[in-house]
Image (cartoon, rainbow, N blue to C red; front, side, top):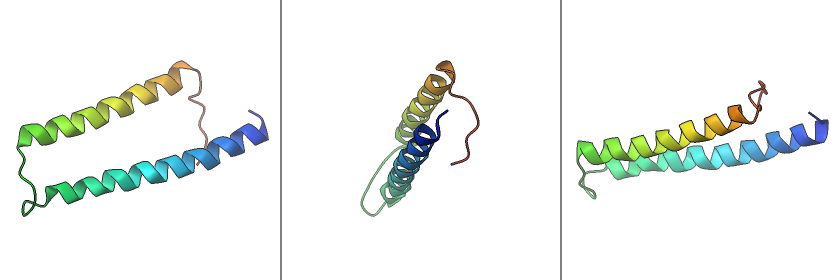
Length: 72
């Protein structure tokens, strides 16, 4: 992998991962039962959807032969 491509990947990946982690952390706000009401089924569905998308994206990276280990 060229140095420029690798640096671009790292820069963009770091920014995107930071945003995703921040948004995931904000899910905790929904657990406040003073403002929200939910069932265990709804919570399971929410996290199943998120996990499914993560699994799908990981599969895409591996399918395209991009599973080389790169430290972020």
